[in-house]
Amino acid sequence: MLAIEKQPIPHYMAAPQTEAELDYADLAIIDLANAKKPHERMELAARARDAMIKTGFFYVIGHGYTQEQADRMVDIADVPFAQVSDDEKRVYAGTMKQTGSYQGYKLRNYWHIDGGVRDQLENYNINRDVTKKTHPAALRPLLPEIYEFARFNHFHVLHEVFRLLALGLELPQDTFVNLHGYDAVGESYVRFMKYYPRSDEEEVKSKNVWLKGHTDFGTITILWSQPVAALQIFSSDGTWKWVKHIPNALVINAGDALSFLTAGIFPATIHRVVQPPPDQRQYTRLGAFYFSMTDDNVRLAPLTNSPLVARRLAELSAEKRAEIEKAPTMEEWRKGRTAAYGQTELRKSDAGSNVEEEIISGVVVKHYN
Image (cartoon, rainbow, N blue to C red; front, top):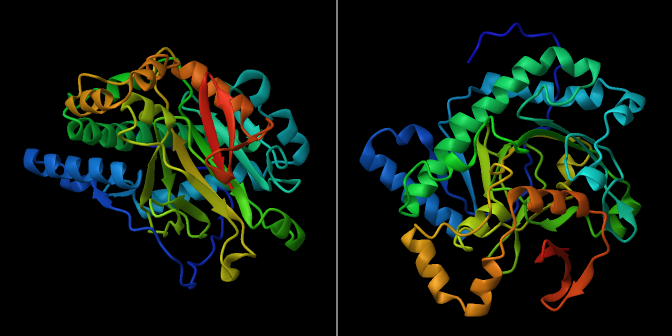
């Protein structure tokens, strides 16, 4: 990592970890420091594969980023929210519905949640090529650090996770890596996201849901664990489980694109954000993410050179295989999902009263409330 002169910025005071007794998900912990020797790497690959199949979520530790570096990035993450005026935020607002791109701000009240309640969260999205768009004045001196953060996520975390998952599927270890060129045309990006407390009235109307159950549309999402408990995953027993904070750990989950590429062996994981427990409700919830997508021109068809994927396809009906073969490109999928999210009218699903649907690029997309 390059030596960078750090600009002085305010320190973000994060919430203390909750003392509430919550029903936490049992997630595997993948220690990348234990992936040096060939036999250790194969054992870790099997664990990562099984965790992705079982829950679609796991933690990563031993990634090489220090707690001090992670704390600094949290401070940077707050700058586009706390150090930029509302007027300037509007100047840099994204045009998601028109362009299918998340670059820039997603301002508050853009998404409809439920019961007439709109979201109370802001996010700021920066393409891995930080020069692709201009940024608010307060953020410009910090772009060298954000650039290095994006590269760290891409090369030291994402690629390492992809190599393990490829080995777990009996594929050449760089199979997924080669679909995610850092300099290729695509939309992998850093996201800073800040949730703000809501009124009691809004909590009642939205049933305490801050972001309804959904899947991410990329391949892998990297969340830098933060202390406010609010993230939940939908488990195989039909209940929502909380994701526990582990300092300086990363929370990894699979998205739609990875599910397409593996014929559903690695299913896109359903997750949501809800009101935090009482001892954290007065705090904002600030997070740093890296959302990965394949190169835009990659067709999201199953990787049949994996024996596991080939067997999965053979088990499907001819009708289902024909549907899978109509896979969209990454560009088509990300633009469709980005433009539609929180903006389209959803219809009730036959899957249950709490499931809503929309159709994007010929694929049924479910939302869980």
